[in-house]
Length: 179
Image (cartoon, rainbow, N blue to C red; front, side, top):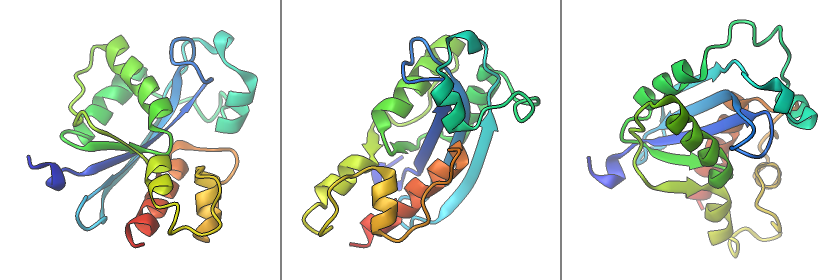
């Protein structure tokens, strides 16, 4: 598949902390987008059963809105990654902080043995914003929150949820592409 015809897999993960070697994914959000038109092809999210809550950072659980009742019907990490892998075949990974999100997904692919079918390129929304810094007069930070405010996009609500994060990245990406 030609690179410019590959879909964009705009992804957000919610986790139990900041270290992919210790913490784990508890939710995945995906907005699959046609790269040329930026039209949404698919939206998907899934909650993942945490296996090691004893290592979780309380603050991370609070930010993600984790509670046992809402995660009652969550799936295993392997089930979630199998679905994610199928949905993102040949797609280009895009995230607000691609290093963070990809470090957790990469670890999940390794841990579950599920084959990663994504293109090997990674796109970072922060970098796209920074690259257009001279066109974005007055924007000093390139966090998702700051870019949402700059473009007058409703900020991601608290608690953060993966489908909301992926959707906000998509909305900012559209604004950046139209500059």
